[in-house]
Length: 197
Image (cartoon, rainbow, N blue to C red; front, side, top):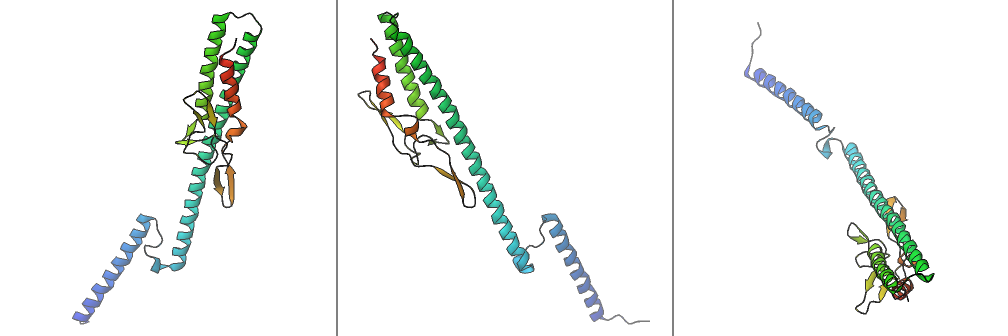
């Protein structure tokens, strides 16, 4: 018969506690999905984890930038199509009035419509995406087209690109220069056309 001493019982309890703590740590790892809970447990895995998380953050930022770029480009395309429609309507009105068959009332109505179309062009030129003007170069906080109290229009000549990073070292321009679409001369001509006689 073996004699059970206090020291043996203490060692047995400590061994079972240690085993229990090991199982708890194992269950925590399984429940958290993490291989380590402290960097000191495995420094190499900890460094790799931080590196992977940094890569994931970069990818998420690039995805967000690409989504924003698509919004800018889609909005620009839509606006440019609308500008084309407005300018085609102005051309049609000009041709109709210039053929000599319109009386004074019809000419005045055409002038009123051209004025409305000019205002529509200004609204289109001042389109915003996410609170930023898409046709004012890199000055996205200010409207590119303004109308003075005398009725004259001024158009920004800021043609600097808005660049969005889409990958490491790769950026794309997402805006259209206002000078390629709108000009003070265009608005001046439209103001002159309002008074067709």
